[in-house]
Image (cartoon, rainbow, N blue to C red; front, side, top):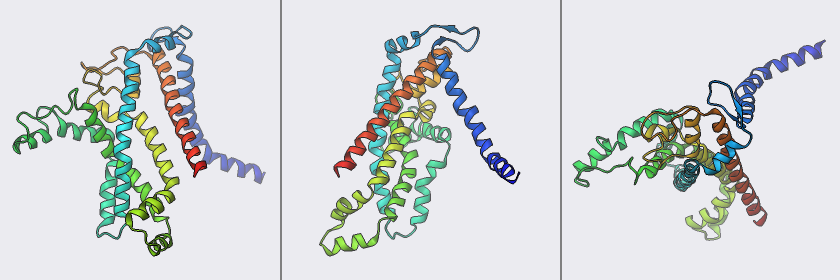
Amino acid sequence: MNKTKHALFSYSFIFPSALLTLVLGIYPIAWAFRYMFYDYKGFGTARFTGLANFSRILKDTQFWDSVVNTFVYAGGKLLITIPLALLLAVILNRGLRGRQLLRGIFFMPTVISTAVMAVVFFTIFNSYNGILNQFLIRLGLSDSGVDWLGPKYAMLTVILVAAWGAVGNYMLLFLAGLQNIPEDVYEASSLDGAGKIQQFRYVTLPMLGPVMQMVIMLAIITALKGYESIMVLTEGGPVGKTEVMFLYLYKLFFPVGGSSAAVQVQEFGYGSAVAFVSAVIVGMISLIYFYASRRMNQTD
């Protein structure tokens, strides 16, 4: 009897999280897996169409353009975020005055709502009366401002906003890794005549390898799935220049009004098929990275 009570007591702690996982995780996946073989608009009767949705994906230029935009967005974000986060971590790992305050400042964007952050940056980068354009005009650096959210600079703008929001999180992970490196290693390398640059290259980077692999993996997955700030800043426009994969998917389930919206009709069946293909793409990129990182570890 005591064992039964103990088991029930233990399962009572597991049950809430298991129920949430079932309702919010497993059930939606099973629902989407079923309807990706149907023509279903969210109302009326679902009509079984077999692989027609996947055949449509192969011909959907908007989706494949969004895939290309996703890789451009993710690549640009990684090229900015990872080196900058590592640089800030190295600087803040030194005995600087106020480093605790600086860590909090750099980490603050991570805890701010993505939607709120994007609204703030919209007021900064607004092409007509944005704060940045007003600043440039007053300095005489521009006559009429720059169209930051136009076809030429929109992707760069959303990448910079995304990098600003992510760099603090990865900085803390790098900082934790740096603080686990023994000081004796640096002292020994100094006795051998190694300078700061040589210590960073031959001591810091190799010993930071496991943390680096984890950070890059998290950054890749987050960048490939990111779309919230883009939805607020540009809605995927102009003319689809910033339409990323998961924003296109979001619009299939929740159509967004406006001239920049690529999708105007709610399509649950086709959206489920797009969700599956998008998940496969993200999974393939993750597997490629895992394979490459393992090969690098074996080589080392």
